[in-house]
Image (cartoon, rainbow over all chains, first blue to last red):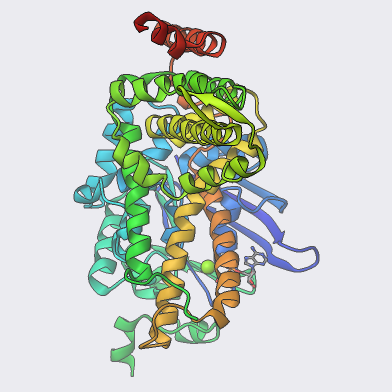
Amino acid sequence: MGQIEIRNLTFAYKKGADILKDISLSVAPNESVGLVGANGAGKSTLLKVLVGLNMGFSGSVMIDSVPVEKKTLAGIRQKTGYVFQDSDSQLFMTTVGEDVAFGPRNYGLSESEVRARTDAALAETGITHLKDRTIMKLSGGEKKLASIATILSMEPEILLLDEPSITLDPRNRRNIINILNRIQATKIIASHDLDMIMDICSRTILMAGGKIIADGPTDQILRDRELLEGNSLELPLRLQSGSR
Amino acid sequence: MRGTMKNKSPMSKISSAITEIQRIEDLQKRDQWLNRIHPLVKLACTCFYIVCLVSFHPYDIQGVLSMGLYPLILFMAGDLSITDCLRRVRIVLPLVCLIGLFNPIFDRTPMLLFGFVVRAGFVSMLTLILKGVFAVLSSYILIASTSIENLCYAMSLLHLPGILITEILLIYRYVGLLLSETERITQAYSLRAPGQKGVHFKVWGSLAGQLLLRSMDRANDVFDSMSLRGYSSDFRYIKQYVRWRPSDIIYLALWCAVFLFLRNFPLLLLVGSLFI
Ligand SMILES: Nc1ncnc2c1ncn2[C@@H]1O[C@H](COP(=O)(O)OP(=O)(O)O)[C@@H](O)[C@H]1O
Ligand SMILES: [Mg+2]
């Protein structure tokens, strides 16, 4: 499973200033969705609603038919992984291995299961060699991989990623794209990196001013120069050279 | 006036602080009998020790000295390095010693100590210093053998409010954040103030303000990240790793008996009288 259903979602951090306005969308299990839009469009805010970090919304948000509410949060968070934009916010233990083990351990798995999950997540992200390293001394790319590993160890059915490729060099970026493509889960990726969205997501949702402006096949939306430029975005690089 | 360390750059100092935290955590993770004792037992034992220690009469230096038995035995049996410990607590120890410094000036009554006539204030100063040092050592033993999660779990068993426990855990995590933010800010500063040693005192204020705001934001995010991965202040998950064993009760009972004995019978004098 890993199905998301949002109906008429409206959310404000402060009363009267709605950040998300009447959003409705549904995401099928194992679907990969790109969430694009200018800075401040509300992408991060929407992702945080899904894991219950932004409560007090109106409308309904359901994950596998379970509404996101205070008393369902534990279950929802167990199957929904959220990768922060800033890895330093995500990681808080001293070593990589400890941080990756934190989630499974908290959900009461046996110590051998925790170890197996940790090793699997480290292998999946290709950072087994970083297991005992101090997090604060890692490079940005290594931290991002570690962040993803901390979520993979919980074996989430839904993966929410906030700007995963920002601050990464081309090699690390390519690495992350390959890893994300290998993972079987429902994925929502918020990003400005339209080339990455093209490589991972079959569907793209364009947001502006807290509303959904367009929702359809990636191929269609990311080729629509007028639509993108009208929303402070540019065509993916690979589509620019030919059409210029 | 320039404000930073003389021979070490701020970065290497922060780096070594991080390494130091890592070393202590390595100690906490050792597979050792002391590490395996239930955290609540160790916490209770340490608290009871400190209460007994502090309750000695200011002139009862023999009594306080005999309480040194507890850290002595645990340092040896727990395979802890006393030199590492002293190096780590070197900032606290002088403060502890400072407290009693004026006693000899105010309290000049003559007194007999190990056969010598000395000022009573001198005796009470020594007693106070010993109490302080022993309290620090016993706390170090607790910390070097118990992870912060287990300590917080012990506190939750005592039904301390969850918000307080989370706060303690966050502050611990926050130390790391604070260090890395400091590193970032001093780096950014020194790049724009080349050739300058340390941070000029005129910008201390604004740098500190920046630091506070940034790391508060971060602490907030970290708390979110912890809760997203199942953290809750009742530590239900630790219950399956930390179990009560009969040896826990024996450990606690034994030490409590020892402390009570030392508190009520002058061990050193008794031992001494055997030889005289
Ligand atoms: N914690 C917050 N408190 C108040 N306003 C916020 C908060 N987080 C974001 N916002 C505001 O919400 C709007 C949408 O932000 P965000 O969801 O981060 O956009 P995006 O991720 O698309 O760049 C912005 O105008 C931003 O200023
Ligand atoms: Mg954002």
